[in-house]
Image (cartoon, rainbow, N blue to C red; front, side, top):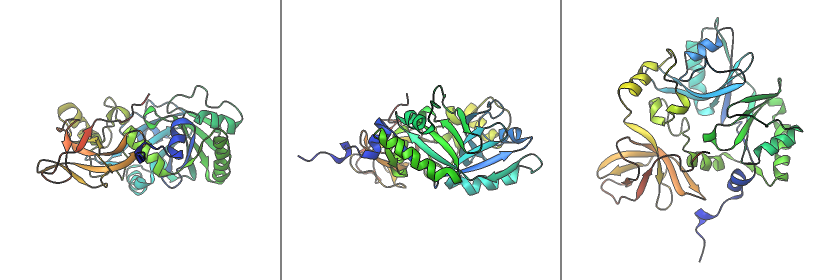
Length: 333
């Protein structure tokens, strides 16, 4: 009897789960630098999280919104000694830059793209890979979203959030990117790890229930539809662009759609597929993955009044066979 292919881990997946995996995110991420005397104040007024309370060498996750509460960008916002870095998906590069140039007066702060590149080092042996590459224990005691400056001109290390799976992100200048990637690859391979591509990371992202701008949500959505309130939104901070809509939803109402997971009975349905309860469309698939541990799974936006555990169909009045689930599939430690 042939083994179910969904139960056969790929080497890349195994590296993320049991050793170390290197993910070069040069094409997937853009870094924007914001600096100036009023940079902190300005970013606090443009993002959903509390930038005013962010210590130096710490980061947070946040959205940047339109006045109507629609996401312009998602980001990891990193506070350094003399500037802020906005680490954003490439899919929202243009909208983020346009928004910043519209709302950030040059007299308050400067906005510019940076040649810094991001390398993800994922897995339980990620720290050992980085320490081996650095020649010292640079990962010791590094808290989630804490930054350690390894070289002020060339290398910054950030521990990932628990939701992002164990690992770190190394920010290096463009001129040092290739040699750093080669050295990290050699260090990972010594520990049984390897380089991986974005397709492998997508499996982990879906397992962890992490939405991605331009894939699972965009400017047509409301921030709270992503289900990232605890991680991305401060409900205690002062005014910011889009706050009125966010606060009204939080304190007086609710969103009609929310990010959910799907379990498919066989192969995942393509992104964009509408799902139904009876004759009414109630959800839409946005991301899919074949997980060696969880089978055929996906993410998408579903009506908030459809309870997890409900079954949906791919056709109006079709056979209910796709299970709606809470997220994440894999619980973060």
